[in-house]
Length: 413
Image 1 (tube, helix red, strand yellow):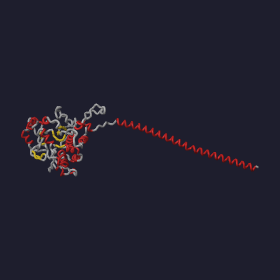
Image 2 (cartoon, rainbow, N blue to C red):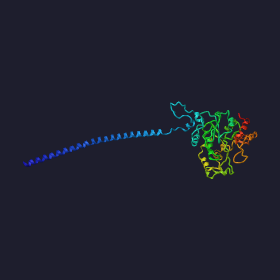
Image 3 (cartoon, rainbow, N blue to C red):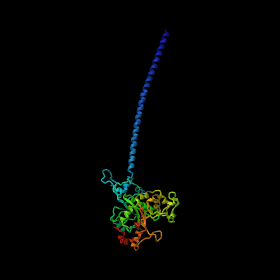
Image 4 (cartoon, rainbow, N blue to C red):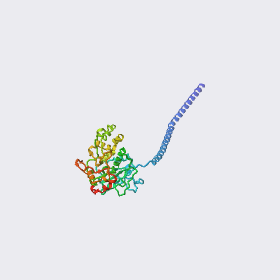
């Protein structure tokens, strides 16, 4: 009996222990089944918080950048295209927009500047003037004009003679005056020279700034798309034929009138600098008159040159005079078939010296005028002619009145 009780007690203990184990196992399983749910909820919370942080950061960054950009733009100067500043320099720039009462710039203002004064640097001016339309036909009725470019040291003492020369031929010419920066012509607003001065700089004889002035004149004249021929003159120059004769002569010419010769003397080849090679060789070196006349194409090529001009400025210095060599040499090298190798401006070197003769009032006679007008024969459009010189220099202020008294001899209209 005791053994039986003992066995029953053992069995009860075993059953109890087994029941406890099962209960414990079920509890563990229950806990484990709850862990994924809690972990999933935790991950979702973390994702939501991360998203909110990123969105908030983006909003703050955007606001900061917007403020910085607005501040930057408000402190920047307004940019207007170069051609707008050039062609309409007096027009107000404020209020331009869809509701502006100002008329938009017309084509006329874009192809023919209404004023010659501007604030462009030489570099900006040369860049602007070098622009060439690619379309053959002009979009406006173009009447070719002659640009008369006066390179002076100040006054134009012979301008009354030139006024008579231009009278009645408006629309066929343009005038450009390069003088000392501080000088202003004191003339009537009815004169063709009125407000025809360009932004100028100081010029010294024999220095590179002489050529700078020539290129500056060409560039300003090129801004008028109607200018077809370009003649460089000084304050001592006069016309020796009437306007109609000169206009027809130049407009119908197949060549530009640039004096360019191979001068073997010390004043020619003797000025060549070996440092110009290989771009410019001694055999290519030329000398000629400063007073040139060129077609529009060559004018554009002269002011567009950035290669040869820098070489001349570096190595052609007194006693090499750049104005006597740069244009004759470079045009001969590149466009020899387009130039006549002669000048149309007469001068008298018979008296010797480094400058041609100056003519005063006592020198002005009909004989002198005939001597200039009927010079030696020359070639014009591949034909021989006796009409070789259209202009002459040098004439002093005292020669003005005798010249005015001989206008009928010039054939002025």
